[in-house]
Image (cartoon, rainbow, N blue to C red):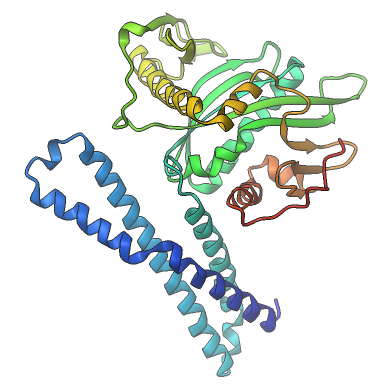
Length: 377
């Protein structure tokens, strides 16, 4: 970058960061941190109360938020110090100034998204479920590809990933999979991935090298904390155990450790077979059930979520949120925000941040799109 371009980008970052101040509400946040701290000191029964865990989590999140805000402001000041030293004649600082400004731009962009993520459970871990659509082996292979994409994304973001349940395809790929993405804001970032994902490619399973279209559905739930009141009556559960499936070999499970929970009043069914221990599998399944019951209750009050539920039965044309085209050209396009890229390989290797960012800015009303553009595939 030329010096003029670096300075222009730094000035743009400064303008953006200064605009955050009113949304950060630093004074109010610090006041809330002190209120919780005072409560933990003055109330002798604080540590025995059920709500104390929730309050301490709130305090911890606020502290991290204010710490990040402070680091962002300091990074901005440091860049201007470097700029002044460069202007005074130390041209050797230009490469370092350029790198610092690039880092500042990314940090400012990440912080902007956290300001947008103000939903009740945006801070929570995410539970993702992927189902294959019609198409057998083709769709099962597509599920495996999407799973790898999210695994790579989680890795680049510093999140951990834990598979909770998996049903292998008969010949190849994965028919369905449920997994936990663990890390701050993982639900907030990934919630926009809910919907139908469409793949267009020359099939590696077709001896005639024909083009195939495959579909898979992705559903994202927040992991619900134990301290949230979601009442599950054991008498309303049917608990089935069975032998977990697998690839065989020395790791095959020879005991009935897999668990299936059916919530009789709602008909919600969850399964887990990721652990060798039946007890651990049941605990994981209860975690998923709590999240599904929370979504069920919220969907009764929220017509938009009811529309999402209605779309779950049709994994095919007309319901896709994103297209991944590998033939006759290369392009990944989000049909809601119109964000697109020709670098399909990078997206499949986990480079989802631009799509996630554009969706969050779009839903916050910050990003405007041209409604006239569409997907012709």
